[in-house]
Amino acid sequence: MSSALSPPRVPKPKGTQPSHYYESFLEKKGPCDQDYRRFWAGLQGPTIYFYSSNRDFQPLEKIELRTFVKLTDHSPRGSSRDPGIHFTLVLWNQEIKFKMESLESREMWKGFILTVVELRVPSNLTLLPGHLYMMAEVLEKEEARRALEVPSCFLKVSRLEAQLLLERYPECGNLLLRPSGDGKDGVSITTRQLLNETPVIRHYKVKKEGVKYVIDVEDPVSCASLDAVVHYLVSHTKRALVPFLMEEDYEKVLGYVDADNENGESVWVSPSNRGSGPASLTNVPKPLPPVPTSVSSQDKLPPLPPLPQLPDHQDESYVTPIDDVPAVEYMNQDVSPSSRPQVIPKPKKLEKLPAKPPKPPIVPKPDLKAINGAWAKKLGGGSPQALSLVTSKELLGLGQMQNGPEGLGDVTAELQEKLQKRRALEH
Image (tube, rainbow, N blue to C red):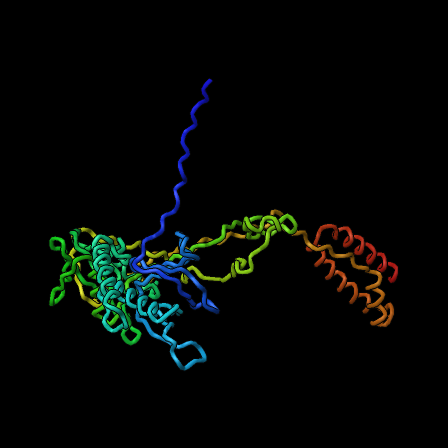
């Protein structure tokens, strides 16, 4: 009985080695490095890639040369003599030091970097004719590659958005390409520089004529590609203009937020540290509680209006400073009193009246015997004058009491009866 044929094994595809213009071992020291680190490095286009070995195809780091400023030779620290194996790559926002294996390797790296950045073969380096021929071939490849590539500083934004990007991110560059406002195949250029700490914004127009791009200035400049346009602007301004390039930072370790079972607080956990339990990151700051501030309704600013979109047929004005842009009317400007809405005050609530009138105070009954006795002693006992005085005063008080509260009428009648009996006894 014949056995079933098994399918042939297909070898797993291996990563292909990247093709570089030039590659070799070198040592690199960045701004955050305390000492040199050894890499296998390769130059491809305007980028230097760094690998752990010459068998790897996945780079560990990379350096973009679009913000190139210059190359300088330097001596190691503590030595006055240059051994010829060190040089510094100065970019617009950082400096990186390199240490090569030999003088020839240093001159080769400097030559290929300048060829890619300046699009010309350097003539002021110690190079052999074979080295110059290799750099001429690299120059042809780089020019052909850039003719088909859109520059990284080309962004699909409007005129106003380009100005805002250059203003908010000055560390990323000051030269930006954008689509033209007339809706044609041309592009526009926006630049932002500081003149005595005053921002100066300029706009330039680039027309497309066939396969060429022409910078529309007093003396028109024809370029083979958009990248050549950027290179012309950078090289003819003493590298004062730097292509705009947004830097994106990516994490190297996967992590997530989890709750600690012991104290219930949220911590940052990495899968590699899962076996040892969740550990909170020290470099992740806790959010601060909101600070209560009393802000009146007049101090609150209204939301900013959306950015206006430029129509395709709008005719732009180029090479104009930012001061020529018409002033924008903001929402929080002073408003004339006539246009302000009148605020009607809310009516005050009326106080509630009591349902029943308050009761009159209760007046205690006067003790007539005590009053008569006191008056009699003062007037000399029981003389007729004293009695008559007391009687008249009592009658006056009784008359007033009759007009007072209820229940005093009976007391008055009783007093009158007693007075009549006392008079009868005296006579």
